[in-house]
Image 1 (cartoon, rainbow, N blue to C red):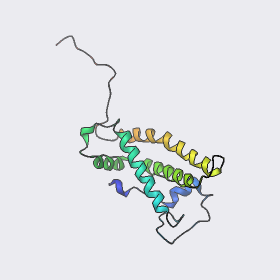
Image 2 (cartoon, rainbow, N blue to C red):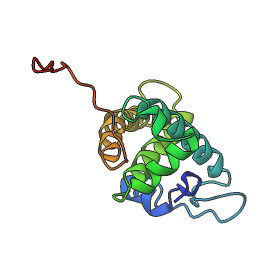
Image 3 (cartoon, one colour):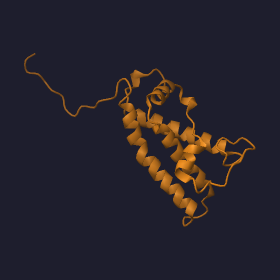
Image 4 (spheres, rainbow, N blue to C red):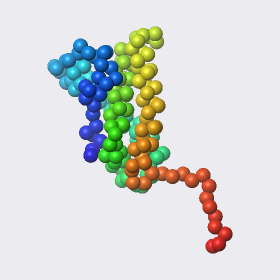
Length: 152
């Protein structure tokens, strides 16, 4: 499975914000989620930020020499995700960016929604990546101490 196949659908959005987007069904333009004519731009930005965050976080969890390139690592992560954890993270990031672009001041509902999804994203990112890293071939194990044998 290839990382570039990672995407979300309207069902992923509706599972969190069904009431907010209930009357929207845009079918013109470059829409992917039928929310807006250019919702694909927000989805692309969310995917780029998720990719960057995953690459940064996984460097602490997986040995560098296990995978030949960052793309190989991302593909392995996507293939190891059998629970849809990456889709949830992408949904959180999409909703954070979506609400952030409409937030005009700190007291607005959209600002509070953006902060809410940012907090969910930053909370679940390391947790989900640790779960996925356990399914990869060689997780990094940092030993706190080293045993020294006296029988050498």
